[in-house]
Length: 341
Ligand SMILES: Nc1ncnc2c1ncn2[C@@H]1O[C@H](COP(=O)(O)OP(=O)(O)O)[C@@H](O)[C@H]1O
Ligand code: SF4
Ligand SMILES: [Mg+2]
Image (cartoon, rainbow, N blue to C red; front, side, top):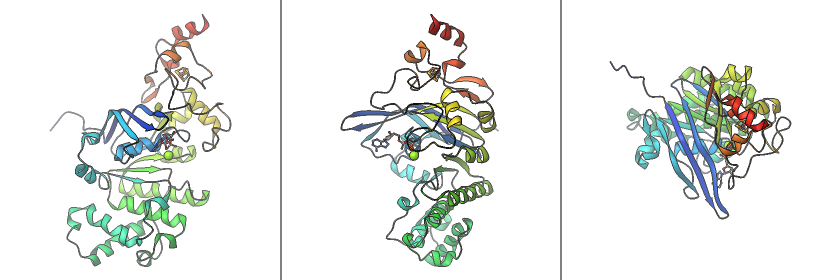
């Protein structure tokens, strides 16, 4: 028996992603570090454009290269660095290892194939014992993920084309498909944001029940702090390509520390479009010329001289609760005095 702790399910260390575009280099992800344990449900919040989807695409290695480049970082999944994997090894990870539900269900289903034609190969390659099954047997098995997501008449659905389904049904199909491989980790990136609010709510609730039943680990990206509060164990807050705070969900809501998180909480429920309704004035900075030091310093009501000079590391405030902000540094008093000098 080994005494060493098992590796975390996912551990992202110091991940940077840039986009080389015509006008220059967009330094989007700037040393992103976070982790997910087996069985854990982790929330990720932050306003549109802060780099959430880029982080998830980097994990699955589905960023468009070019324009994307990954100048540094590690993405350890069950202890193995995905950034060093060969394409054929990566194909084994996608699906049975990590699966993703995208914001727009229309974009992830191919319009020219029936649901059955798209679900069939997913089932066939999800487990070695499925490889040799007949088409009929695969079809039988393909009914299960559709039943899992509470879709009526799954037999008929297998022969339907995506365009014949409503947006809500398509999103359910995508969730069923993503979970059909029994992944270790499901990444749900704003599932249902393109749907109307009631349907969105139903879809997220259904997803919550399914992952609970299957004990899948989850990264849930959502605009709804209510959903995060209800469905996750731990939350990361992201700002302009940096993780700025992490805490057990209950602690984050009871005691938000980072000035950005505090602004987010005041801005509820409006995270999308035109910046934030209240809370913090201003918007995300340019990624081509990001602010020095703390990327939030251009909007922060507590900015101190050190914030412009240095990038704040994570400081621990209580068990499992860290904020990347000099206000929580052991030297905070000295930094404040410098501000007043
Ligand atoms: N393919 C791309 N080319 C250039 N810039 C991109 C590309 N993909 C994303 N970006 C930029 O990266 C930033 C973060 O985007 P994204 O990860 O989609 O944010 P979020 O998911 O948090 O809304 C945005 O400024 C976006 O314009
Ligand atoms: S490090 Fe400074 S600028 Fe950044 S959030 Fe903290 S106080 Fe504000
Ligand atoms: Mg996104």
